[in-house]
Image (cartoon, rainbow, N blue to C red; front, side, top):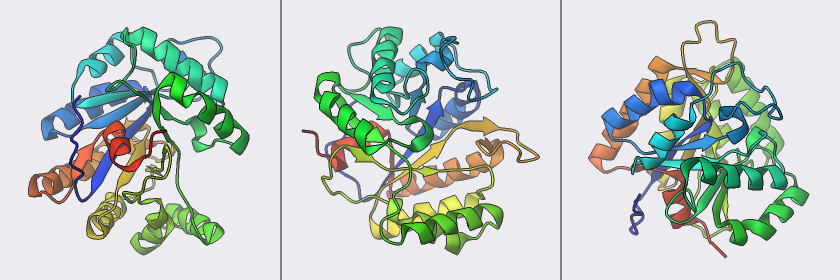
Length: 273
């Protein structure tokens, strides 16, 4: 997957965690139809159904063959999500090694590897350990969750309230600091988790805010499918996802933004030491 050296005004990356089978059966056809790029973060213990991998979901995983097919698609990226779905350096390192074995490649994307941290948390001590091996493992970026910035506690409350009572102004206030600039600020990429309770209008408003401010955005998903009762907070409605994907495709067609893999975004906004 060649990297465009010229950075667009705004970039949006669609990031899918774990390696759930609906990412292949539901998401991938939509992306291909609308000519959208995306990143799939694979937990190797999950797709291999390893006994030492925690049961973090009842959803079936992709098969190894599905992961290999996505790897060969020049518009998609495969990244590591650990082996046992644990936010520790040792597990994240093992996840890269096992994923490289699965796809039978030295590295996962354009000569480098990407990591999406499980559970969206990484302690300072684990970050220091991971940072020490990034050159050896050729890790180009580490994707975390939201960035609070100033008034972090207030933004956290905005997120909690907006999940219970969806409000576009609250949603924008809660996630505005997670939008990223072209700053060369290390290897960290921040992302906005899209929960089952999040209406498409809120996500679309955040996309439009990124365009208006010339910033970049990573949207983090898990499962895409039917979730009529909304009981599973990580399963986003398929029709709602279609609305968001169609909006991105239209904005890309107009030249307002570019939908990229997380690796391409990292090449433009992260400083690799």
